[in-house]
Length: 374
Image (cartoon, rainbow, N blue to C red; front, side):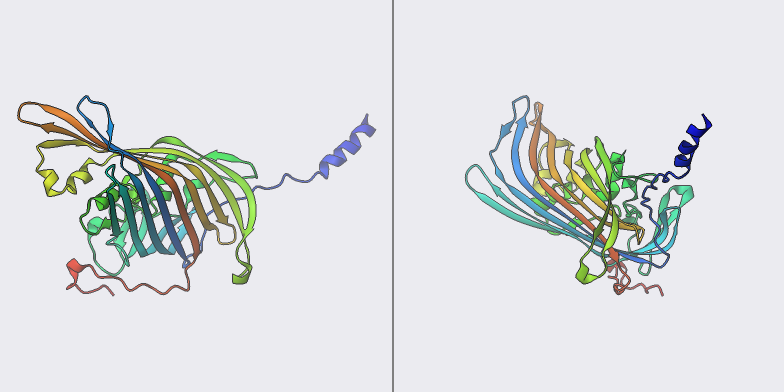
C-alpha cells in the first residue's frame, strides 16, 4: 500500500499552484496629472408627439424628424493624496464643458422647423480642489484661485475613476459580478452636475435642458434594471508609432436600465410668458429614460487607473407635460406627450496630463473687482 501512495504524493507536491487572478486597482502616484476626455453623442428620431385632452384617447399630431446632440467635457485631475484604492485629495481643472444640439421637425402639414441650441457651464476654466471627508462621506469643494459662486460647487462630485465598475477583488477570465444600477450616475454624469445652461430662449433649448439629448446629470435618476460585468482577460492596446503598447484588463458590461424623474420644477422655471398666462396649473412633467446596450472598460495595469470606456446602445426618452385647465366653470386635465429614441455613443479616455499647461482661469463676472488669490 505504501508503494502505491508514494508516487501520488510526489505528483501533488510538484503540481503547479493555481494561477493568480488579475487585480484592477486604482493607485496613481501623488503629483500625477490625468487628462480625462468625455464625449456623448445622441442621434434621436422623433417617434411621436401628441396630446391627451381630458378622457379622450391620445391623438398624435403626426410630427416626425430627429434630434442630434453632442456633449464634450475635459478634466485634468492632479492628485495630491491617494490611499485605499481611491483619491483623497486632488485639484480638478475643468478645461471644457459644453454641449450643442439641433432639431429638424416636420409637421403633418409639411412645415419644416429647424432649431439649434448651445449650452455651456459657468465652471468652465475653473480649478476646484476636492478633499474627501470621512465623517461626512462626501467631498469638500473649494475654488483653487478665484472666488466664484458657492452654489455652483454643491452639485459637483469628486470621484470620476470608474471605480464602481470594478470587481471587489482578484478576477479570472469569465468571472462575472453585478454592478449597482446607481453606479451609472457617476459614469454618465462625470464629476456631478456642471450646470450646463442653454444660451437663448428658444423652446428647443428648454427641451434639451429638460434632458432630451442633454446632460445626464440633469435627469438620470436610476429606477431599475441591471448591469452585469464580465472579465474578459488582458489585451495589448495602443498605437506602435506613438509609443509602447499598454497592457489592459478588459471588462465587458451589459446594461439595461430605466430612469424616472419629474422635471416640473425646471419646466415651471423656464416657462415662457405666454404659457404662464394660461389659465392652467402645471401638475407634473414625468421624464422617463431607458438605455439598453454594452460597454467596454479598459483598465491600465501599469498606471493603475482607467484607460478608456466606451458605451454603445439604444436609448429612449419620454416626456409628458401634465396640466389642469380651467374655463371658469369646470376643470379638465390635459397632457402633451413626446417620445424619442435612437443610438447613444459615450466615450471616455484617460491619458497622462503632465505635459498640459495650467489653464488661465476665467474670472467670475460678478466678482471682477475682487483680487485673485495668490
